[in-house]
Image (cartoon, rainbow, N blue to C red; front, side, top):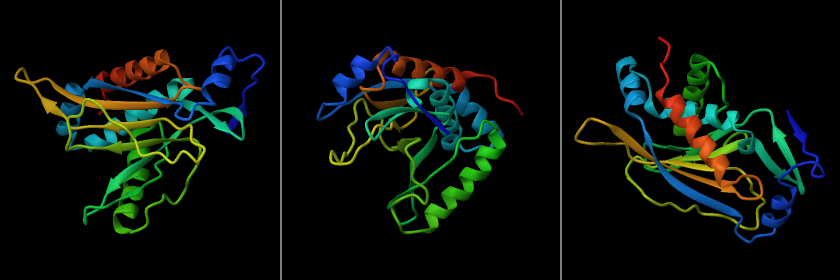
Length: 212
């Protein structure tokens, strides 16, 4: 479900009208996220660390409204919920795009995500089975401890979905683990403070006490 915003009453209407005309309206930042507790939890429970941080990122994005905004036919819509379109590596070294729905319940999320990941790994097509505006474009680069990142973009295609990349987790001498996270967003919809809200929400969910 989605609702159209009233641009006449939206406080960011002027920002929207300004930035939507840019040739490159996306801006991005890279931050380090502490994943010490999250990784320890996953290891102790034999859970997928990738699915764990993907779930937390989706929870954070759904909690920060600007990450649920999309430009569609010149109007701005707020979606009730956003999901994930991540890259999934295949055994032959290529990758495919998946469509993973967000479920607040961890067991429900992992069951659906595992099925979708297995489907993509067994296939050869590139595009996801289901494509929608209410997704986050997500990629994982576990080989790289990056400090900057850019994305391939087709400027002829309308696109306003946030793009999030997760890098290589590293461990410091004191046992702390961190992971670089890149966040690119459409400036007509999202400002720097909103990216900060997302990063804070993501870090809080990575640190929180986990059930079970």
